[in-house]
Length: 234
Image (tube, rainbow, N blue to C red; front, side):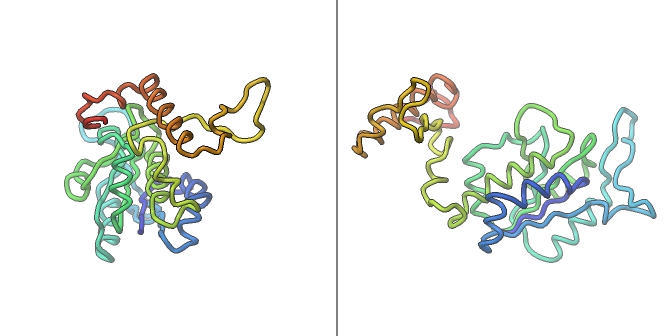
């Protein structure tokens, strides 16, 4: 998989995407991440990438020409399965979307900045818009890093334990059960006996029971079997 990210502030992406799981995906040859500085496609001597919005109002807007030139350079070099714009207007990101995106080949992610990007780029190039939630960030870089990380960890071979990604929170519309490690007792609190029983069938049953109880209590929107996004729960 190759992910190209277009950013007005590429430094915001360097650390989260050059360490940990993304770094492992790249080092194993399972993914390629390219961060493109939009200023390299800026206009004039000052490499301008933003301007005031037509109609007035506060804030600046990323211009169509620099973004279009950057996108054209990428689209002319290879085929992309999706051109994603990180935007509060987009569909809220969720695990099933991460699963679908992880099965694609090449992706472009556009990071907005200031007040956003020229609408014509959205009309001409963008195939999917994604939001992390109902809040506003200073730019799309943090959101793009989160989406990239969520996608890369699902690629077979990236994680050391192939079961890890499949058993993550939200994979089956359930929150993860409580987790424990050594010591067995800490400040008067003990690990549940079932987890140290060695009875794997009982352990799995306990984990499923706890996952359902936690989801029902903390995220009833996920657990509710009438939620059309979740389908019928067994």
